[in-house]
Image (cartoon, rainbow, N blue to C red; front, side, top):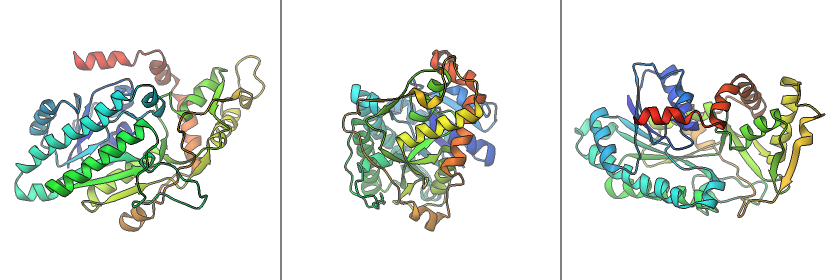
Length: 354
């Protein structure tokens, strides 16, 4: 297949592209705007593949996207391009509406025009796969309750509201225009190449530098953690084997309180990085509780039985095994982290746009 991946320089998108190029024979066009979260260094291991190409473009630029579709002639589009950081959405929601809502609309329209001109057999085989989040469902309060594909939407933040809007657009384009679309809603991803503003990499890197480890509220918020490489396998399963018009929830079966995640990272660092910053007795001593985020969801938990039942996907990693791999990757790749922290990775963005 020829697969266009939007947002392929981001965390999940780059994991997907690395998987597609290393474990399959598919061709990939990475279409990415290269915002602050887009990092081409995350694709260094596959960028020389003859099956890989990159185009810097904004999904909201419908004309440019249309030209890319005409030139690449994809068999599938896997749409991951999104603004995704909740705190940033609270501080500046406009970018989230522009990319996640307006951008998804423009991509859908460009795709519809391209798809409508395909020969009948290729029309039938084509897929538009929209990758979303479990945050569109709001939060859970009953300890036994899980998000299913039929859970009503109740987003809490500007980020999750913008993703909910994009989900509705994709379903409408399928229902109204017949565009062969599928949706997936995933739980919290973690793993290698995660942007350092997110919880797990932030805790790892702060701890190594002897900086405070900020935890919102009392740290009792619960998330279902999904190793990003497991997610990449699930996404390919859905786009190649999923039923058109269906939604599949993808979860890691790994519910953890935020404070438990932070303490688990500290314990791993005691083992894997015992040479602490001067004057620090234990990594856990760096934990500090800060004012809770406005509208902070208390618990997310995914019922992933549908994708297991219909497509045979289950995660390979437990939270214990995945977290160990993640911490070790950051310890082994501090240069990548420094390039993000000091902004030098952005020079690739300038080079790509030259």
